[in-house]
Image 1 (tube, each protein chain N blue to C red):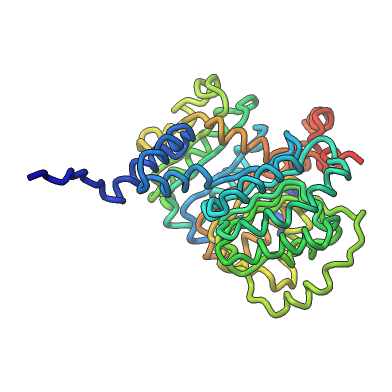
Image 2: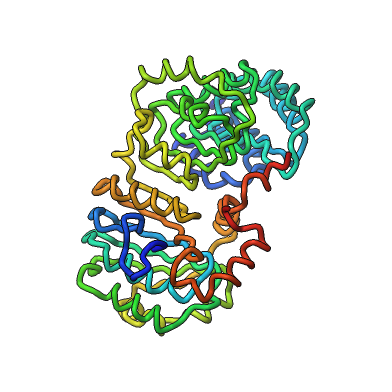
Length: 290
Length: 144
């Protein structure tokens, strides 16, 4: 009589625990994914958790490659939980590149249905074609998207950005210049829709931009600030310090974790003796905000 | 602290008096100037959070730090309202700065065994500088 070969199976928790330990080693994760069927999903979870398209390499090419990859293996898109999209660079992306981006990006964004965190660098929102903007709006509306970082996003009016924010959002980080070069034509329909939305009940906020802070403390209904427990505030100008001071007062007892960048002491009367040389150092480094 | 020529705070001065539930306070200081310690003294003396457990000071450059001023910060932290403190961390960017800031700057915190002087991790330093780029005017970042 021949006994059936018995191969003991590890409990799934133990497999996940082991593979979690290798989360920052892509080569090890790739090897794990080849071990057996049980190891595939936990390995892929880490392998594809975060995808980045950054402007150090040609952006349209990266989008096409990722699209092609997801086209061949569409189930991989479910593992992507964080997406970084950056067109932030010292040089402006050529218009020809933007045409290619606008053609491909909506398809890519449409595949990222399980996203939890979105990081955007230097996106000229008001300059996007309607299809791309609509794809971003759909992305922001995902119920699982709870964390958004926007850095150097470019909008004609703040509403071009704030109308994108949806209620599941818990963590928001904003630093952005507001540019006036784009016509503000697309916010109207979104503003109407906005009135019917429930507010974002943020738990975490990082902000270092005056216009956004001014808007946040104003009569807006997009963000309910009373739930913010963690505040990371950068007081990079005298006006910003005043706005942060108002926000901290408004948060009152809900605030549990506060990080502040010390105010620009260069404006302080204490700085009368130090002021001139300190200013010139900052100017020479390009570190002044005026 | 920008707008009080007579030394008194104004409505624009950052104040934590209204935030009794703060558990963790972090202050990031890029350039340590002589008045930073007195500002910290003011900020901490206004804090009335009985549950505060952790105070972190991130100091990128220790040049210009004055021991006397920081001793006064230490005295404020030694007050009764900070009795629940579990950690006072001084985070510096360079190894040399760890030698400059010794336990003598914060003797009370050191004697309580809650002083931790450590170096900023490379990743955090990278993030700090990445975010510090916001000081640069946007037109410099996006040349037309």
